[in-house]
Image (cartoon, rainbow, N blue to C red; front, side, top):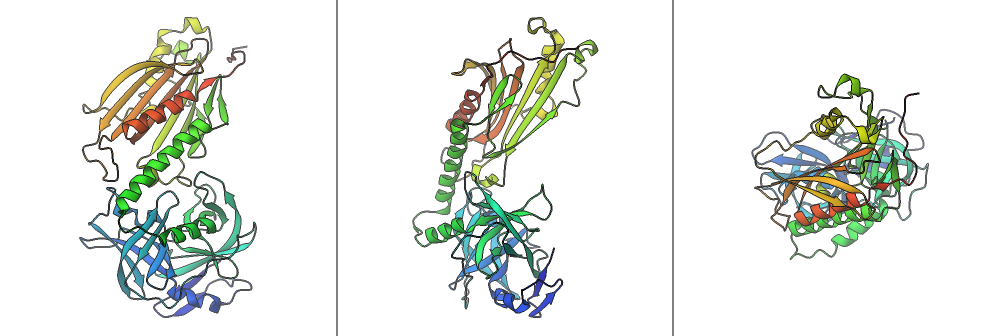
Length: 441
């Protein structure tokens, strides 16, 4: 890992590791092109969030990530408790937000300052294995320039990410990614927590589109309206992704929708096995396998949905006759909803629940429980003021197969909630093959 630090206070370049075929003077112009973005509370004190931004307009316009400034949208509108500042040298300039794209994680801000120049955006896409440089304020005082290579483009629903073999540290979000000609080919967005010295960036095409759209801003459309529209569109994409998926994943006798366009899923066995309500003599007869899917923030930022989405599946396999399941087996089924994996977060008198029985078009029957809690304070960007937190639990009612339990947790408007619940249950169906149960030899 190689770094180049630029000390603005002393206007000196301190080269820690020599970057081959690169001169320190090549980065001189970025003294005035890449700056610290701070979000501060009006009450004073230290800043609550910080990141990086870069100049795209001589009239004071900079690009950064939406998540860097997202505190201002906590209630779905510009929160007067916080302000955005851009630090240039020893001065800090108050910034205003011109445009946001929560799904692509981009924001355009403006400050009352004239710049002498701007960054240049590359005229072509970067190729796999090509050398790149990532700029950003890792330690909030010095500009770090990390060297690495471009890995590949990630095809997702937003179609905007690029995988980088380069370290991205805290504070570098929103900084530019450069090619060897020092042209911008992307924007830092986050590090890869699963792989050391790697990260993700927003690609050049998405950046160009975002900048071009900002040239035609309608002054009569508020940021709150834009946010509302983007949240609704993202919900629609998630639902469409479930409904239109051609890929399903096998879980014993069942097929479940492959939602990894938006969700990150993991499978694991039940190591804890059973609680005290299951008799010891029955424990060895019952097996459980879990699959838990949560929002993949590499592809859909939390702010883009207005809430998190979590889907948990449990396949419960009884090693014996399906017609002679013991009472303790059903105790186990019921208690699954009390386990940490299916923790009932709605032990609150304000929540109301209703039970139902439905059958999807594939002939799969479900026992369904829907619990909902209405928010007293609804985010202003939600047009429908009937905004709820949902906890949906269901179990299949097909005695010839293993049981599949499903727990779906999210927040949203009732009409969207119905669509998500219907989409998830509709895309579960039986595998057309002989039932296979692990038997004792």
